[in-house]
Length: 574
Image (cartoon, rainbow, N blue to C red; front, top):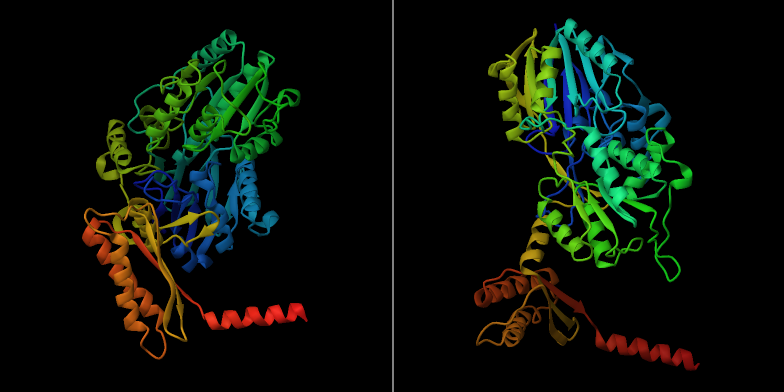
């Protein structure tokens, strides 16, 4: 019998940052390592990754990182994890290709040939009595796999993102064979995605989607612009196929997406005739990129397609300038938090062209498992316990209702939060016996961990109240103010009714300066700190605002400067 613990360092009660761990006795198996996109109040943050301190402290116990698909919510932090830990990463051919590209992009140096391992649904990897196997799942990106960890007490199955979409090019016979085999062996726990647990809608038909797109091509004699999300390669392929049937040239825009598309083309997952794939040049006097046979596919993650469309509508994009003859087809159903951006983008497009087609969720169904598909997965695997993952709390809670419909009772559905450690002994759930340290790290550009709470608070203050700089030159020898104070404000209007704020600033500056300029040696740190506090209190008293105060006191020895200039002049004459 084994002692099994299941916990997450990210991905529970949130959207993204998926990182789940299964401990079998002393062995740790990591399932996915993704990122989360920041909300609007996280100023300047590009992405958020899970804190892997617990894994670093127990790195000798880690058996491997098992990646299920190529979306950044699942592999975005893989490079960071591989850099800090010495384990191998396992994934499908396409997923590993995207990880390689990520490592090269972030300039992370590891032994890729040894540490990046390509697997498929026939692969079996033994870790001293614990076997890891894989199974195909359908999703909107190629090479998606689920993971099964075989233990003495039964299988632990991680479905990751999945669907039973019959339009997907997946060998369903092999998938069902694998799932049925795992079920016969006995499934102790199933980690099942829950993002679509509230979705009762059917997937719609691909025929209806194709029919609508074909009609757009028939009715348009000019350039057509599509917006899609970068990971939706299945839909990109459908658009390309229809464009090719109308003998139109295709251009795919989006820096990050272009790398994914290139990998998909090289590996044969995306098929675009070379003679019809166009690399656009920047717009100039001779090149306008407005050919009537051109199909432009604008791609990106979350809000990126909307921002690109906005630039095109304002005429500031370097590749495409939208005009009244364009047909714009929006195939990007807004993510949570991007609804305002999506609505504003449509308004801007309509000001340029009225030939706008917006596809709703009925024709662009979510790629995540619906309620009925979750029921089907439960019925096939027949787990003793289910742990809803990949979702907010409302999705996890909805999963409980879905499971109850197929006689998986509420006491057998375990809702966890990040850090909660669900313990199983002798094949029985023992409850949340412990917790592990978890957290998240904000990344700004390529810097990891430098955007902490203090920095974020400063950025919030800058956005809300602005910044005020107090600049002065001080002669440390004569203990005199050479020039200043000069007040520079950004994002803050320091005027107040019936009060001359500049005069108050100068009086306050002189008052503080007299205290520090009478000592033998100037305590610059205390000087700046007291000046900062006094000015802050002064501004709040008259404006009720709290801008960031930055005193800039420059040590300036005027006599020394004059002497150096004189010596330099003498040398030049000599």
